Length: 315
Image (tube, rainbow, N blue to C red):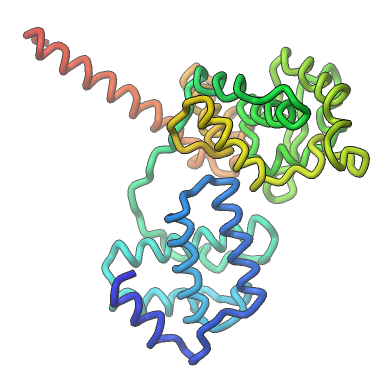
């Protein structure tokens, strides 16, 4: 944090209160948990989000669920005069992401950032795994009830592109359908969607339910396919599994979603079908994966050009 940001934190809050109330603290913690365990953001990124939200919370000095569009505009005007453009962009993006999360999770009824003009910045392309890397991760799951649970969760993630929260909330009835041809997931906005799964996964689902699930703690207390499964605990185990598999990339549950979308599009799948599978409300969200493929093609093209120049080829 630079000195200008410190001034905003300490001098320009409307009241002299320095802490946020208990409710705001809970909202922020829930959002940070989502960033860590579902999105896989780094600790430094999460710390930045937390710092920006606490500064904003102190400035508006009200329950974050009661913040209005005008409150946010007033805050933007305040920081515009004191901070560099990149710092303003980051803070506004934090607020927008926070309220998008709150809206999708029904913490608020309306998103106060909905009409605020987006400040454009270059989108970073999502990192993806190769199928060989996915196989190495799957193969490193232990042959124990817990290990087989994690193995099936990972296979669901890469086979369906579903969010980790959607997979962990699956009921047995969501997978025990006609010949195990699809799963039914409850997505954002409390909307169900049906996702097809590949044939060989049927055997593994049946094997897990009949041979391993009953041996997990809490199996007799719930109809959930994965009893007592928490995304933060799975995320930690996934990190260990990937490390043991020799994967050096930043591994988090959402990377399987990115990977499936990229594989589908690179193999000619219609973008509308991919949008439906992933449950994207806006196709522009799905289109980011087409840019991943374009990025790969550009790298290949550049390598070819380099090779040709070395061999004295000319077009």
